Every structure is written in C-alpha cells, then in structure tokens.
Length: 329
Image (tube, rainbow, N blue to C red; front, side, top):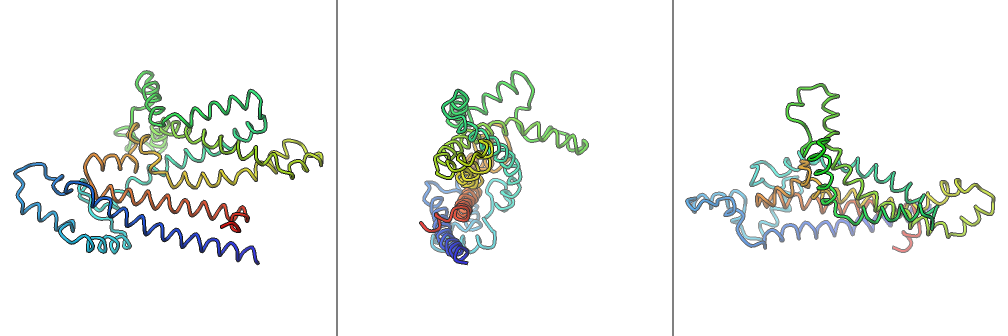
C-alpha cells in the first residue's frame, strides 16, 4: 500500500515538472522563429516585381500582421486544437505534412531500436561476463568505434560500397517506381530492400551504445553481495548471469531505450538525408532548405514533445523498477 502511494506521488511530481517543461518549450519554440532575422513572407517572394499589396495579403493570411503577444496567444490556442499552421512550401496544414512523414520514421526507428537493443544487451552482458579477456576487448573496441563514428559517415560508406560500386541496394528512397502495381509480397520485399542500408547504419550506431551501457551496468551488478551469495549457493554461472545479473543490469537499458524513442526524429536526420528516406528527419532538412518556418516550427515542436514524453516515460519506468529512485526524488 505504501509502495503504491509512493509511486503515485512520484508520478504526480514528474507529471507536474513535465507539464512545466512542455509549456516552456512551446514558448521558446514560438519565440525562436520570431527573433530570426528576415521576414518569412519575403523569403517566399524572391521576385522583386511582387507588389506590396500581395505581401500584405500573405502577412495577414499567416497572422504575421498582428502584435507579437497576440500571435502567441493565437499560436497556443490553435496548438491545443491540433492546428500548427499552414506550410509555406506545401500550402497544406503542417500537421498533415508531419503525419504523412511520421510512419516512415517510426518504421525505420522501430526496427533499428529493437534489433540494436537485443544485440547490445546480449553482447554487453557477454563482454562483462568475459571481462578482461580478448573477447571482451574485441567487443568493447568495436562498440566504441561504431558508437563514436558519425552515422552519416557510415551511411555514405555503405551507400558508396553497396549501392554505387556493387549495385546490391538502391541509392535512396523507399520504393522502386512502379512497384505499387506489383503483388503485396513484392512491395514488402522492395520496401525492406530500400530500408536495409539505413537500418544497418542505425543498427551499428545504437548497438555500440547499448553494449557500452549494458557492459558497465553488468560490471556494477557483478560486484554486488547477492551475486556472491548466488555463487556461494552453488548456482551455475549461466543461471546467475541470466536470472540475477542481467535482470538488474537492464535498468539503464530501459532508460536509454525510452530516450532513443524520444530522439527518433532528431537522431535520424543525417541518415534520412543520406539515404533520401522520406521521414521526419528528411522533412526537417527540406523545411530548412525551403525556408518553411511553420513546417520547421512544427517539426521542432514534435521533436521537443517526443523527447519530453520520453524522459517522463523513462523516469516512470525507472521509478517503478527501482524504488530507491522514488525515495531520492
């Protein structure tokens, strides 16, 4: 009973702090695009023959003719009903553009995080089990390299090697032109074929991080008294590693997984641009190139909300799994 009450109090505190952070991010997201130099409407019309009347009409259409404080209240009000404005580039609601690109990023990141989490957990645990051996040194070295090398650089190398030189994979995109008329199985295979290289790129990056985190967590757990007691009871080493050490070492992995989900957009910008994968990361890049401030503001806000909610989820999971965290906070 007391345990449940402590968890509810912990979640309530985290909810309040999350809402405050969310409000601050919304405000900053509004201000940062208003203090940028230049007029976004003027950016749309590079032709000097465009009359001032037409510019004024566009300023009024996008609400930029109103005082700043009024723009802010309108922005917050529209935000609560899901209206993020109209895209300068696409001339459609921003929310429609974002939702149209969101599935591609979710699919790519879901596969990458799932595969890298499984591989990273087992490789990290195995490296800690074989600590000090050549196997441990090899796994640790490879993980440090894959985690440190920029993902866009790995993507370019894969693209040059397997797409340009060997011709085994497409140079970019998500489907082959005309594949929509093919059978469903062929469409799925074609989609996975296009997704292979960006998935491998993200897999290398995320797996390296998971290995390092899991190995360090396992080394900490292996020094605990209950592990020594398990050895004293005569339990097999594989049983100790699987049922005692790994379970307790998974706490940091759960946290980093939640954060990776939150960073799903920002973390794949470089990869999506390199492989022309039409997700939210590529959309952010295109919005910058097109000077589409409403669309860029909407993507930034989506990223910020994803990260905040992911942090909240990570805190709740950690607090549920480890009661000590609730007591400290």
